[in-house]
Image 1 (spheres, rainbow, N blue to C red):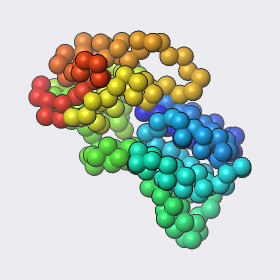
Image 2: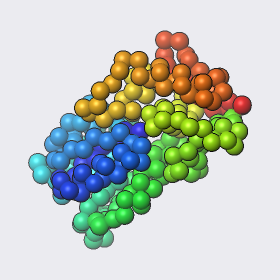
Image 3: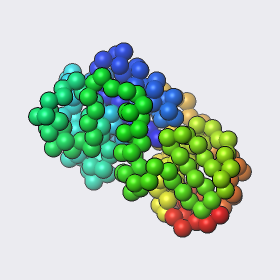
Image 4: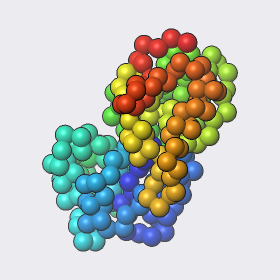
Length: 225
């Protein structure tokens, strides 16, 4: 999953980026509101961690522009992260379109847990784990089970499987999957998604992930092992 972090405090932004990367996310980090606004206009993100007190463009204005840009951008989960913790500040953030609110200082584990909840709810699932057929994916534990047996998969393979299972019943293109796997500046091989899909099919049952020729990949919502 690809996350946008918008935070002008260098030490805090670096810590958030490192913590989310360790949790398995691809992370883009922007240090001002104008750059974040440009990124949100061109790049797909699974969620946004947004500070309010930003240079060049306030966090609230970034949020308002995001919510007014398109139907797709209106559904991107946004977690407000700020030192402004008055009731009025929380109300302004939520009324502007925020999905959750976390005041500084915060615990990195809580931030990760809130992001997991936002992402799964945006995918239409309230359950903390995803299950399709005989495959169970636990985002919190970063663990995959097949028929109750743990499966050893790489971080990128986990991200591909997570995206497909979160969107079970929907076709995701190679581009859509690739955009969720790599942050800006990371080298991406042209066949990276296909390689990850191949490995997942080999480690799990081969028919879990279907190829829709000319369109992309699909995990059927009613797939049985």
